[in-house]
Image (cartoon, rainbow, N blue to C red):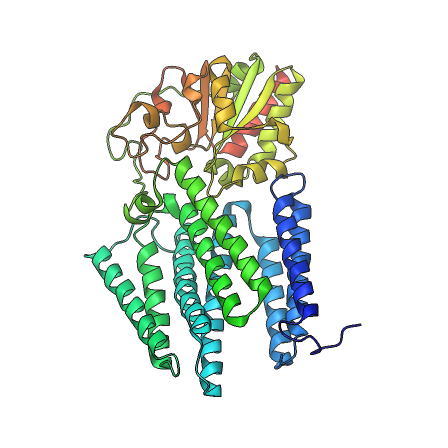
Amino acid sequence: MIHPAVLEPGGDAATLLYILSFSLFILGIRRGTHPTTAKQGNLIAAVGMVVAVVTTLLLDGIGNWWLIVLGIAAGTAVGVIASIRVQMTQMPQMVAIYNGVGGGAVALISWSELRHGLSLGTGFELDTLIPILFAVVIGSVSFWGSNIAFAKLQDLIPTRPIALPGQQVLNAFLLAGILVACVVMAIDNDSPSQALFIAVLIAAGLLGNLVVLPIGGADMPVVIALLNAFTGLSAAAAGFALDNVALIVAGTLVGSSGTILTLAMATAMNRSVANILFAGFGGAPSGPAAGGEERPHRSVTAQDAAIALAYADSVVIVPGYGLAVAQAQHAVKEMADELEKRGVEVRYAIHPVAGRMPGHMNVLLAEADVPYDKLVEMDDINPEMPRTDVAVVIGANDVTNPAAKDDPDSPIAGMPIIEVAEAQQVIVIKRSLSPGFAGIDNDLFYLDKTAMLFDDAKKAAQEIASEVTDL
């Protein structure tokens, strides 16, 4: 049995336990890439984290046990309660706030390490001080930026871009000041100024706020992924400062995966990361056509939709954020089950950025026990659309807008979309003609082949299922 405070930092036993922990992290991530093993992967990664935490607590020199136990108890209570209560529509906000807490923790650890080094009076080696400075800057930016992302997604502040006059110039001056201060502290590495360090901490936090505020709500998922990468990189830097191999590897995993996810989402939107960060895109107006007159469209009832669906051979359902808001996944599954009883082939088309985070629709539909093999990615379903009798769009907007293909002047021009306009008939279930996150009208709504069913997604799906049963 291993007793407290018997593991030497950097010793063989501690290193082996850390290797075990990050091996479990990697295995957990690998198992998390498929819905059927994702839950198992999450549990494996959690075991890896337990191993890493216990190993750290067993290291020689760990003290203040009552504070550690109090912190673990408080964090566990908050995490468990929040995770139980959170709705799927609020998952992006939770990801943002959890990510921010990680960045904030790294920034505080860096400050603690600086204070500890100054108290010893021995100065800092550059290979320790530079990671500390990197971690405090990136961690602080991630913490405050994630808080703004959370507030926008939670509608605590306006989702539209909020920019100050000369915003980019101000950001550039802040960044330059932070870099100069870090260089000054690195030069004076024997006794770096704690006051200057605190100034860098505050300036980095201000920079995090000012960078995220001008970004529209439509781009918040990409920003969250990017800030997640920042948190991972700051954690890896803290690992170098603390000589903690598990923190280095875990931070690198988070940083690399967050970067890959950011680039993948930007590609799915046909935009660069720089455009997302600096274009101020995504302030959606409230009118049906960006404030213009309402265009002619055709509306139907649930009974009309049920008849069209019941006598089709193939149906493709395109879910979006509106489905998540209405918590309609179970009702949609019920509707699909009734159609399949009549011999209708039903599949689900999944766009990479449908909802507010990658995989949002996959998780929602898995929650309703929709078979994974019925979920078809955008590139695979688009060639099938011309042979589809009815495409049913439920709460999706920008990801189905034909303007992305047909209008080179559209803000979403070139963005890959689910090509529902190629189907023989389209039914759109939506509360109104209001635009999506991109703030532009959807030309799909006004096509001759499109029928609008104006209703709550859950209620509409339930009524269609009932009507199909009665046919």
